[in-house]
Image (cartoon, rainbow, N blue to C red):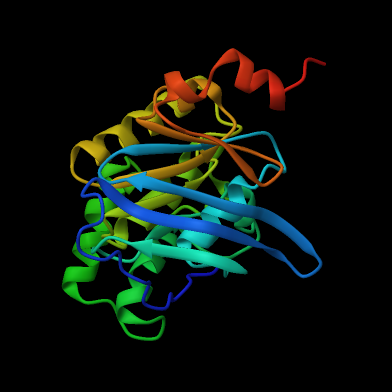
Length: 247
């Protein structure tokens, strides 16, 4: 598992729409010899839930990685409103089962961006970790090995790690994929509470139910942006039929 130390992001100029937390224009990104995102332009609203929606391979995770600062754009412009650097919660599968980490150690890694990996945590750091674990309901799992946890427990630990970064911008890659209905509902409720508390949440998902419950959607297909706006306007039967063909 890696904690990424991000360079200072470009800031949106004064006079930009007050409701935008992130703005990108003509954004392209990908990997050597494999372009993925193709000239995307959109805004991410502040203090809202935004869903990046699309089938596998549509570019959701790549866009999330660019927004998180984990991947570099190959062209275009990406800017952020004033605030903390983003906290990024990867897919559960990106975190190795064999890592000898307890749940608490995993959450403590969220303090590395501020403290560095080699400095001891302060009393305040430990308090932040305690608070994040209590909020996600995983305090009783502190001593358990990460690889021993259920999917829902593990996902809540990873979100607690994101909360421990104390960012006002939380980016999540498929936070409810593979979870049972109860675990999905619990995580969805937690994310809704975070938005109510002033956090901007962006989640990549192919769960249309979760996407329809978001405040805003970006609909992707083959690395291109097909729609951007309220779910009821973007996730229309016509638009969805273009990218999800019946089996």
